[in-house]
Image (cartoon, rainbow, N blue to C red; front, side, top):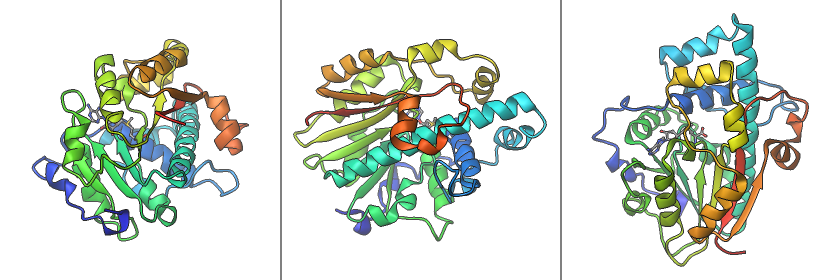
Length: 299
Ligand SMILES: C[S@@+](CC[C@H](N)C(=O)[O-])C[C@H]1O[C@@H](n2cnc3c(N)ncnc32)[C@H](O)[C@@H]1O
C-alpha cells in the first residue's frame, strides 16, 4: 500500500485509550522548540514546522516554560540552546530521511514519533511513501485528536500504539500495512535513552529482521555529554519528569548495532550536523546535544 492510498486504520490500537494518558512532556516541549524556531526569518531558521504551535499541550508546565522564559534569563538561555540543539538534530534527521526515501526506502516508520510532523512538512516529496508512526498509546491518541482538527495537515499516516518497555515493535507493525519484504527506514529520534539497554537490543533485533534492506536513523546522548549536563538543563529535565538513562560512546553504539546485523555505521556530532545539514546554525550557542547515527545493514 502506498501513502496516498493509506487507510487510516491502525488507530485501532489507540482507540480504547484515554487520550491524555501518559503523554510525553518532552515531545510537547520539542514541538514548542520547533514552533519558536519557525518564527525566525527564513534566512536565519534551521527548520520550519507550521504545525508545531498547534500541537503543544496545554499542560501548565509547558505553558509556564513557554512564558517564564521571558522573566528568567538563565532559563531563557537554556531554552534557546535547547532549541538550537533540537532543531539541528531534527533538521539532520529530515535530510537523512529524505535521502533514504530517495534511495528507495518507500516505507518510513517513526518510533517514539511524538509530535513529529514530517509527513506534512515534506508532503510533496513523500509521494508513494508509506508513513507509519508508533508511540505510547496515550500520545498517539492525543496526536490523532489534534491532527484530525487540522485541515492543512497530511492525513495519510498510519498510527499504532506500542510500549517498548514490554512490547515488540514487530507486533505493533503487524497491525499496520507495513510490508516486511520491502525496504524500510526507521527513525528513533530522542527515544533510546529512555529505554533500558536490553530493550534497545530487542528493538534493534526486531528492526533487523526480514530480508529487505533496513536503515535506522537514531539520535543518542554521548556519554561525555551526559556526564557534563548540569545547571538549568538538568533542572528542566527533572521538572518534565522524563530522565534520560542510557548514553553511549559512538563506538559502543556501533558495536551494539553490528551485533544486530547493522554492519554499517556513520555518526555525526553536533558540530558535524551543523556542517553537513544546518550551516545556518554555525554561530548559535548550544549546550547539551545529541549525536545522530545512521545504521545500515548493507551498502
Ligand atoms: C523526547 S520525545 C521525542 C519525540 C519526537 N521523536 C521528537 O524528536 O520530537 C520521546 C518519545 O518517545 C516516546 N516513548 C518514550 N518511552 C516509550 C516507550 N516505552 N514506548 C514507546 N514510545 C516511547 C514518547 O512518548 C515520546 O513521544
